[in-house]
Length: 152
Image 1 (cartoon, one colour):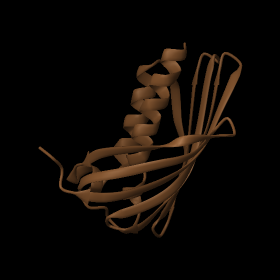
Image 2 (cartoon, rainbow, N blue to C red):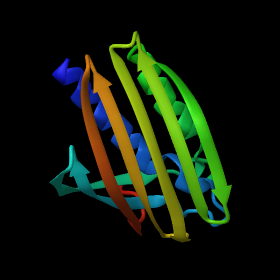
Image 3 (cartoon, rainbow, N blue to C red):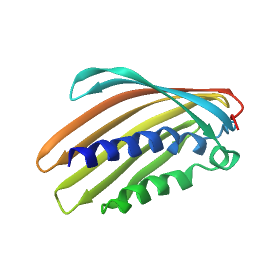
C-alpha cells in the first residue's frame, strides 16, 4: 500500500500543479514552467520540491481537461471521485476534489491559485489522505513561473 500511496501522491501533486490556473481571466503562456512547492506534511516541514514541465498551448488555453485527468488517474486506481466545487473570482480560482475507494482510502484536496501574470501564478494546496485508518496531511505553497520555450 505504501507504493500505491506514493504513486497517488505523485499523480495528484503533478496534475494539481497544472490543474487550475488557466481558468482565470488571465491566460497562461505555453512553454516550460518551473514550479516550486514548499510546506509541510503531517505538520513537519519538507524540503522544497522543484519541477520543470512543458505546458502545451491546449493546457494553457483550457485547464478544465486537467481536472478531469486528475479524476481519471485516480479513478484508474479504482477510486470514485467527484469535483465538489470549483469557483473563479477574477484571476483567483478555488477548488475541492474528493475521492474514495471502498472506504479504505479517502482523499480530499482543496486549493486556491491566483494568476499574477501570463507567466506567473501562486497558490496554496491542502490535502488529507486517509488510508486504512491512517491519516496523512499536507499544506503546500506553490509558486510557478514560465522559464522559456519547451525543449524538444
